[in-house]
View 1: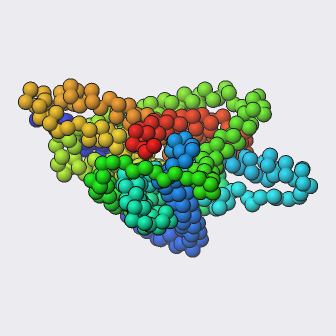
View 2: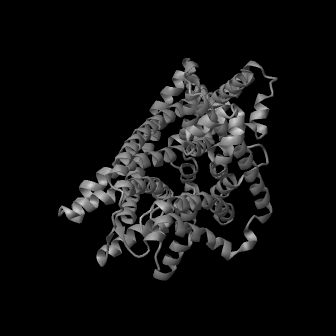
View 3: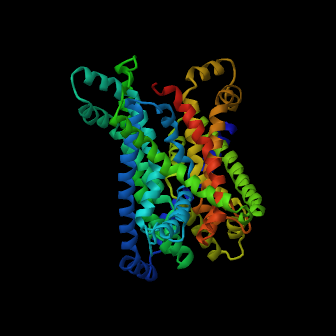
Length: 539
């Protein structure tokens, strides 16, 4: 009994930790007075319509781009056979390793007015003025997000098509349907839930972004939250903007969950459809060339060219690179990543074990709230953590809560846990799904129960899932920018923060070094993901 109460105490602690940011943001509306009403009126007549309209246009462009590119590339590698198909299957995942703000820095450095491309064209052809449109624009941001986030749609659509589409496509071919009709009436309806889920994930990442919108000077909700907090010094306005953003993200999350349910239903039925793999349709001629274009252009624009653009200043002049500070920035990033990964994995193991051992209402509620954390933008988490600090300091000026939250790594790790505990939990739960419940019954019959069951039975079978969870959290922490930018302790910059600051100061050549380091770290989970998907692909 004491052990069970201790377990519930830790679950309650996790619940409070994960709910504080959201409750604080929602609680900002309770501070309703004349000043707050005046602030809202001024925001409604000045910046709020611009934030809403800009964010809406950006989301529409990103949704259209990711759906078109992700679904087309998924259909190409799943339904057709062509030379280079095996390479395209994993190469199309490479943009997942590129943080969107890194892609923005790379394209800006190469395509801006003073960049090498426009300078070279003016010199060769005798042109004057701007040759290409301004990169730092709404269209440029949509371009960056589209080629950075289309793998979400590609990955889910490829899985959905691979599970069932080829069998039904083969049946439609035997019934005399041409290829265009098979794709339009068989493949696309089957992949529609997966495409919707991938688009929702891409839009959540777009709404949560701060680096691209701030660097390009685009007035989105995320940039507006930081502007209201840091530039206007108005925490209530920032909290209420964060509330609007949180509501939009929750709507997208609900859409993604519904699409995921439809995907699981379709997958189960597809598994019963046929046990024999259908062969992908071979291509030749102009159709082969078109498929190559569909599979190579996204990889070039989303990964290869940005990497080349960042390698150019490295090759040009190594002396300008900040090698001295690079070691300190890397150490800070690795230190925060390891600390967060260890705590997140411990929390995920406790949550998953509690849900398996005693799936009551309280346990299910905590697990569900922990699973929602990844959908909460970093801007919302920062505001939700700093608001209670301000309230406490107003009530008790001598308290050291503000110092602990902003001058130590505690507040930053807390924000990371709220954001990325869901990543660790999902990986651990997938490991638990592969452990039959009969193992638990057998262990109890042999006298092993409680945490002994976890230590002697579950843990040996969960080591790979736990290692994957720690790796994913570590990489996400390394790339996280919004929360780190505000909550980092003094003189403890990370690779993401330094890359953003150098790029903002127009020192794009120096920003290449930390940016490339983040790309190399991001390649690790992409490689593991491609190896995981390899056995299920059709050759």
